[in-house]
Length: 373
Image 1 (cartoon, one colour):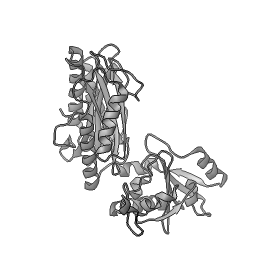
Image 2 (cartoon, rainbow, N blue to C red):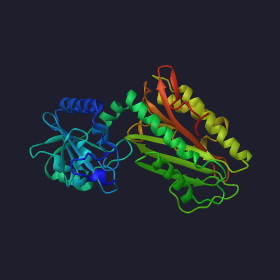
Image 3 (cartoon, rainbow, N blue to C red):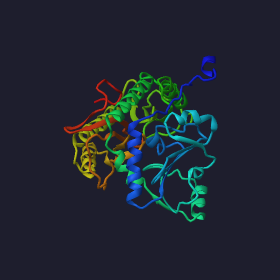
Image 4 (cartoon, rainbow, N blue to C red):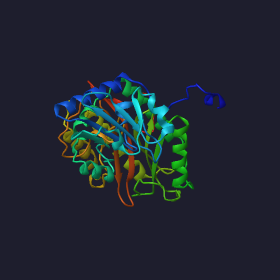
């Protein structure tokens, strides 16, 4: 450890890298700015991927943020909140400045900017920053709806990163195989998160649901009983790749209601996977999955949606919900998950990543996983 503190020694800098792919993304976003006559684009990220997707630098830390200014012309600026994090940010090859607020990266003479703050599911722009932009009479254009489709098809590098993250998730879930009777949901979440972090996950959140009809949520101290099924949902990040997986652990021995619930979920997921071909309408894909649950009499007990795209963040396009007019495109990576939750009855969930190829969707991982058919 002392060797890494020697003057002139280059320390290990995780979650940041120089990449032609990131540069190409910045160029594409600059093109968007030019097409909309914007002075530039401000990307802000607290915990989401807005800045990481464009730079390779993820802010990390609960109280940290990063801000990127992409002018229509001129040098980009990457602002970081903590000066001790500047060497890690500098690994991106961008000019790094100390920024006590996201607006510290903005030049004084801007009047109309694009903003990327969050993703499809979360808006991260702080209220105080929005008020300051308004007080400076800066017109703001939300570019998330424009940029999200640009993130849908994954590059070969992104697919490789997502495969690695999927393996980490699968191995983390393997720690919960076997009888969980007597464990609390705190212990189960800790088992998963510890395994993921050991394998290089920079962040991991495990949600748990215990018992029939239970909602999968953050741990509350519930203990697993002898006849309790356990539902698990894991979201983790490995080197900028986000992974989202779900699985149920039936009690030992499994009951008929457990087997029926899992059969319904796996059959619906298989049908959805078969329908995820390039050009397919998302609404039709969802209908096919709903039809399977209908045959089991469980459609009204469907939990959440049937999945969503994953890449640098979750959710990304497509969102597998009814009424969605999106279409499936080649090279999407989709977390396809199916869950049912009937109070005092069938309760199960199963889901993991699929890659949409020219011939249809395939499991992202060839090897056996907890969400495999």
